Image (tube, rainbow, N blue to C red; front, top):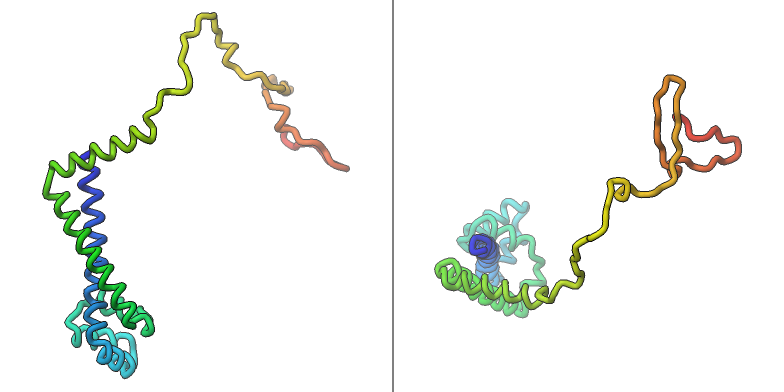
Amino acid sequence: QIEVIVRRTKFRLRKAEERAHILRGLLKALNAIDEVIALIRRSNTVEIAREGLMGLLEIDELQANAILEMQLRRLAALEHQKITAEHDELQAKINEYNEILASPAKQRTIVSEELAAIVDKFGDDRRSALVPFDGDMSIEDLIAEEDIVVTISRSGYVKRTKTDDYRSQNRGGKGVRGT
C-alpha cells in the first residue's frame, strides 16, 4: 500500500510541477503584457513569436506555447488573479506532496486513513449466508435444462443444437442453411 501512495504522490507531484511551470510563464507574460502583445502582433509566424517570447521573458518553449495558445482577452486583470491563485494553490500542493514523499510516517498515516475510509464505506456484514449442502448432488444436476435438436448425419455424426439457434422462416425461405 505504501508503494501505491508513493507512486501516486510522485505522479501528482509531477503533474503539479508541470502546471506550475506553465503558470510561471503565464505570470511573466502578464507582468509584461504590453510587450508580449506587441511582439505577438508584429510577428509574422508562430515560430517567430515563440522565439521572441522566449528571448523577451526568458522562458522555455513549453511556456511560450502556452502563452501563444491563450486568447489575448484572457490576459486581463481578472485572469491575472486567477493564475496567481492557481499558482499559489499548486505550490502548496507541491509542498504537501514533497512532505509525503519525505516522511514514511506520513505515508503510513495516509494508508491507515484510506483503509479506514474503505472500512466505513464497505465494512458492513455479509448480506448473503453460506450454508453447507447436506443433500446428494450428481453431475446431471449441474447441466442446465434446455430444448435441443439432435441431428444424425448419413455418415454417423451426431450434432446437438439449441432450438434457439433455429430461426423461423419467412415466405419462400429455405431454412437455416448448413444444419
